[in-house]
Amino acid sequence: MPAELAPGFLVAAPILLDANFRRTVVLLIDHGPEGSLGFVVNRPAQVRLPGMLDALGLRASDVAPPDAPVLVGGPVAPDTGWLVFEQNPLRNFGDEIVKVSDRLAVTASRELLEQTVKGRGPDRVMLVLGYAGWGPSQLDTEISQGAWIPVDLDERIVFDTPYEDRWASALRTLGIDPARLTTASPYES
Image (cartoon, rainbow, N blue to C red; front, top):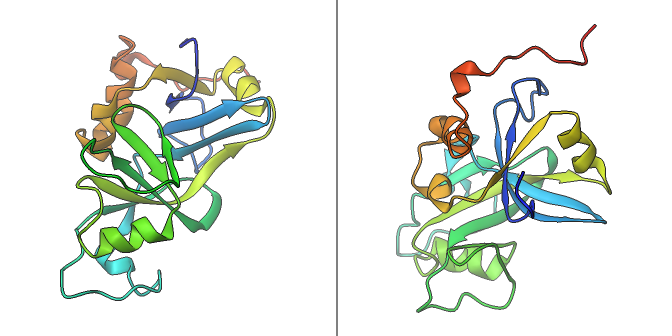
């Protein structure tokens, strides 16, 4: 297990059959005594950013918005939106940024969303609707029960790996062959 869970990935173990998390990869942003917060990064929504403009209360400008992906980030607050993006050391995207790693950042900034729609935002970005959240000690308990497999953060999985391959790719970073995992739960009677 990684020394620090966040930033990192949580990979749903095969025994985790909850429809919200089955075969998901969660980009874990924060983990502490108050709880944990992350975003599912392998569940694309049925729409991409240009199709969300009306729902977001944004107007298309004279520049076509980027064809950025929209993901279902988790079951908590599905009406909220977050931008997960690749940082650029030559550009400043404001103060409302949570730095995840040297390469990745997250924000709920409406201003950055508007800049992104106008083509002035990050080059590599995804809009994530909702999030995955755990109360105090809840995630630690779920990990000890075998529901989640902690994996060190590999930024390439977030933007360079196809959605359908992210779960298996994250497991392979630990040397785990996904085909050899069982769905049998030690908690089933």
